[in-house]
Image 1 (cartoon, rainbow, N blue to C red):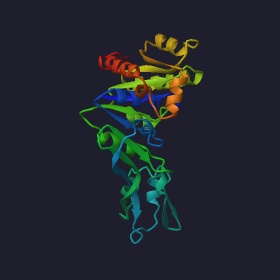
Image 2 (image 1 turned 90 degrees about the vertical axis):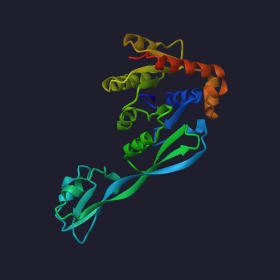
Image 3 (image 1 turned 120 degrees about the vertical axis):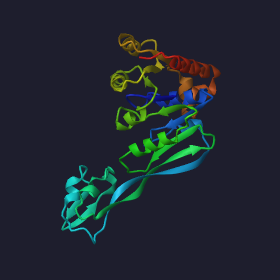
Image 4 (image 1 turned 45 degrees about the horizontal axis):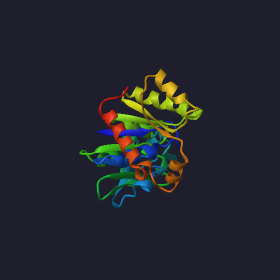
Length: 276
């Protein structure tokens, strides 16, 4: 089973929920798909013993064959190639690895070479995976693909998405069995929750909501979920104790066994089919 944990915005407690669920379940694998800034390892503390490079194909020009016709630059939709004074200039950081330039070159002067854009790291117990994009790289999707290839098929996979509703999130939740949308009782939290709801509905993935930093005086999220017939799977109260422990690198389930029971109960609701 694959469960994705996402949020319309950052700072809602997405990693708190994803990592806590992974810790509470005995047969689980936590996958940190926030490859630009993975932080689940701060709480799970895995012993990394495998690092897998993630490579993409970028063009390589054979100057002996190239006549500077410019067909490759015209074919590139991302301006990764330019022809100046009959010489091809390559900007690999903006290349989207589509191969159009090699196809378009009439002289067959372009081949493709491997370039590393990041890594996938795994622990020795098979319970932790994370992707890490190299600084300055703009394309995250190949690392998400590699993470999915490395996931255990015999475990409950908990995918911790990047914040927002970008292409990275779409790629992460594609093929998942369920989505947990984490939000907070603020105007921004409600606004961005609606964006996340629209996304998972568009992709026809069952989902429910976890309300973090819940407060009795603000029922805006509960009201919205009731109107939209969205199940609220769990409410995590706005407590100083939880925030202090989190700042020290401890999840609720690591400090109080009752939270572990609540996360297991939430999984039972999900596994039992409570969804939209």
